[in-house]
Image 1 (cartoon, helix red, strand yellow):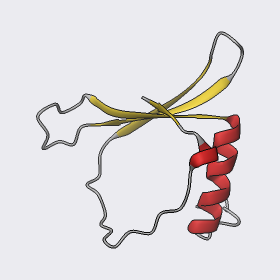
Image 2 (image 1 turned 90 degrees about the vertical axis):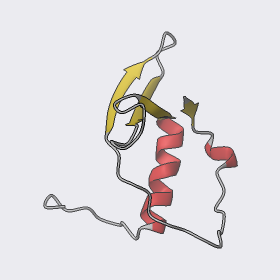
Image 3 (image 1 turned 30 degrees about the horizontal axis):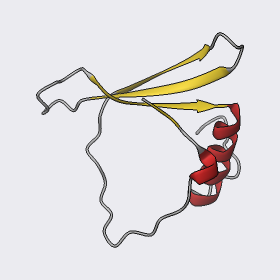
Image 4 (image 1 turned 90 degrees about the horizontal axis):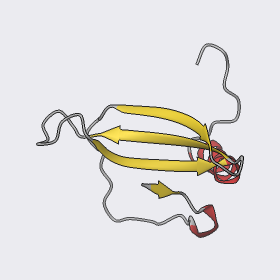
Length: 86
């Protein structure tokens, strides 16, 4: 499980990039014992893997890291306005 630390989230140029295999994912939000709210995405092993249906990775965002990630997504994917039909 990983809680994203956006203070150290930097763009990294890579020589090779490829699109990964699609996997199933679920999300949840929860409040911890201190009243902090989190958003969590769980991804599951691909259908061709040995552990099909098992959580392979969990990523958590708190409010601040979600805001920073939204800024990056808007910039990198050129998302400025999302209409109701998107």
